[in-house]
Figure 1 (cartoon, rainbow, N blue to C red):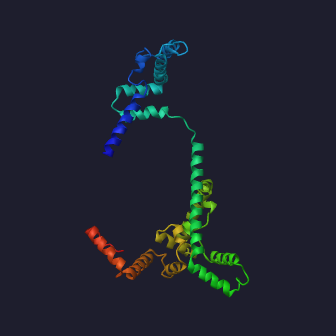
Figure 2 (cartoon, helix red, strand yellow; figure 1 turned 180 degrees about the vertical axis):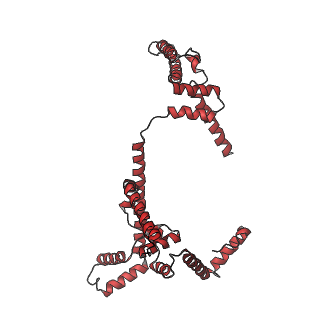
Figure 3 (tube, one colour; figure 1 turned 90 degrees about the vertical axis):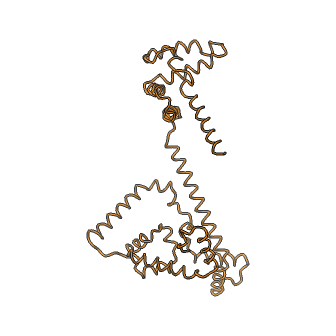
Length: 313
């Protein structure tokens, strides 16, 4: 099966990685002609002597280059206390495959300055944010401008104001487009691109954002908790948003009628919001109950899993 093939490929890759570690199948101490008790100076002297003998520029034997690489790898493993300690542990605990591989390849990995990498990542994400937001706004804008409903309303308004009289077809279309765009407010994910929402800008202004957040939190505590002041309208709107559990962007896309209903029912009180939400869901369910689509959904839910038969659509 595919799973077995992937496991086998992983094992083969792991075996190859183990062979590439340190001196491969050979012992690094024996490769340099020293014992495990050898001092740092003895290891260095032995490496220099062997390097002079096996350097490809001096030794023309066909195996000289491979032998030179082997002693270089052995010296790399034993030249300092940290790498030698890791190698000694590797010799004592060969069964700890993953741990030994981590210690070896952690040091073998190239050192990379994190700052440029982070800057590139942030810049890339910001560009993708910009392109995504622009694309969504353009799609929403195109849909609105081609909607028969909006075009009829805009044309009616233009006729009433006598804006189309004596205009060419192209000029009429542009006037209608402008009327539509003046009347429609794009919110949430369909809002126009705002540079302040880009990740790079948010990172730059993060200290100021944290300061304003802490200032707001202290102001709330001082006014509401400490001084027991009455809620302002802004405070009540915040509590409605908090009770709804929506993001600010999602909340701002709600129709004004729905916002007014929540305000009229004092949804800044959690119990009131819960009742409003339950009543709204019941009303929406009543509209579709009895329809063919609802019946198909109920049959599907019943046949698919009896344990979720009670779930409403």
